[in-house]
Image (spheres, rainbow, N blue to C red):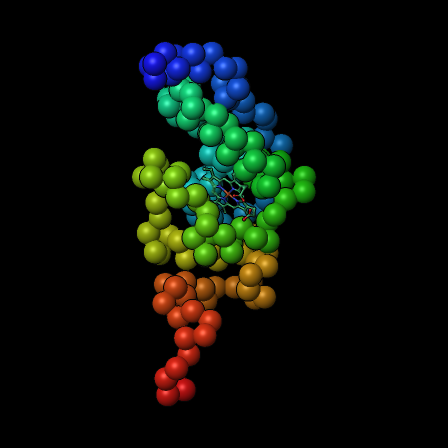
Length: 159
Ligand code: HEC
């Protein structure tokens, strides 16, 4: 039964589009490193240069992946930077760990960044695209690691 269903869903046309429209305009990257780190951890869902993995051909994963890429490109497309986008939120999403998505990191070891690379990406994105979450646009985002431990109202102590 399950196998039959698995075979049948492969015929659903959604999820096999795998389009990569032309690259129109990228943001004015502050450095090649920021771009390189973004390529590694964001471009599959937020650019027109998606690398479609082999399992992106297999339903139901293909549906999920197609949906992530469509929604991701809608929110933020590094290849169509002249359109509306959520650039000022990009640094914040990396800082708070919501991007790249957890499921994606499970499947893509190359997108897992070291702490040093993460803070380089956060400050690079902030400089390149602005930073809604932080007011100031320069380096100095090394508090990332402590952030989890000290939540808003955990300020007991001898301060
Ligand atoms: C697996 C695909 C995927 C990857 C990889 C990914 N994103 Fe996303 N991203 C999405 C999807 C889907 C949405 C829209 C729905 C949502 O917000 O969860 C989104 C939304 C966003 C938004 C809009 C604001 C928000 O929180 O919804 C920003 C900004 C963003 N991503 C930045 C990034 C950055 C920066 C990276 C790389 C460090 C990245 N994303 C990697 C799929 C992805």
